Length: 560
Image (cartoon, rainbow, N blue to C red; front, side):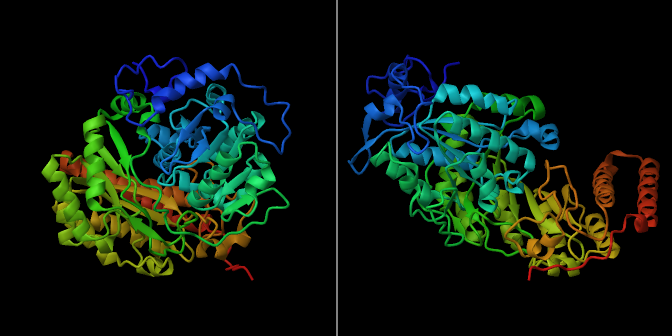
């Protein structure tokens, strides 16, 4: 199957339209880029002789000029966008088998292409290994590499050390190839020096749109600009240049310039579709109706948007879903928002627009218990919501209050009932081990799961990440391990009430409990009773041994 022109390495054999528009892509002029790249690639000078402070410019970028919408003449660059989440490096997620294209990375690619540049994508999600980056870099021969992590992927926001290692290796390769290298993402915003040491010229702090556009404009205007001049005076970046001061004005609201459709044509969509069909018998894609979250849970790290929240119009989001349905025919959509919908009127407008165009696709969301009114549940069902995940966190109101979660245990139970009454599956996120949690609080969480009977749960332990009140309370207790290796790590990195083994046992028991509750309809009464007795015995054994798993008394070590 032929790929869109933007990814061809040879002559543009696909462009047969008399209007000069590639039949695979509607982007203006981009059907010419592969032909131009092939023609000029042999003219490229070796990069090794260039001085470190003078970044190279490819022959096609130096020779080819394009008009931007403001009709000013600028240099066209060859840009590679990349990210570092490798599904194969996360055993739990590989087994789960639900990969999504890097949505934020594709949005950035679309933004850069709007400025008239040639774009290529290295998509780590389904890559076999970080070694796959070497031939991709060689084939792309970019002037600029932007490692832009997917800010919508909760796995990326976990800042896993395995993915950090992969990112640093790719950064080193891009730098060794003589490219300008920029990095953006949650981990990079929290720990920029790690990525600068790997070879990045600059880390974009937060969402990074404003500094990215500033830095790009400087290269457009002066392709051979020296590194110190390129980076000088730009706010919201971190660099290793001694003469460049770091100016960080704090978390900024989502940038309005990041709009329009992601660059879906850069994605190997058939590969994603095959993966999903082989694993699950259906296909799924991702969307986002908003960026950010205005709530202030103590443990929630927000290095990208802080407490800012920006939502797109309901009709715009519906139009995008309709577009995806017609172009890719996914069977399911993952709405990657931290909180989907938020207001009932918005959801009702969204549902109506989809209904009018027969554009609805069953979708999954994340929401809050205190937003799931009866009217909201009905509106979500009408729009096509098939599954909603709620941050239940704990069955102990005392712990919810310590988290400043802002919800009540009763609201969690009511939300599950209201959503379930509309035929929407409900998942609970459960968090174990928060500061001050004791055995009674854990048993209250067990009771919540028993009473509310969610369809599915996800269980984790409290994970201190920089920028949170929780992190400030425990940072002096952190040892050499400050990040999980992968999403199934579940290691306690501070002194909670119990050790990691205890919390993993609780996790397993909670999962068994949910599975048993939903298997009851297919079991005989005696089989269910026997399984229940076995589960109760396991709980009793764990409770009896809890003293063996106790850690030293927790000493609150807030930074002075």
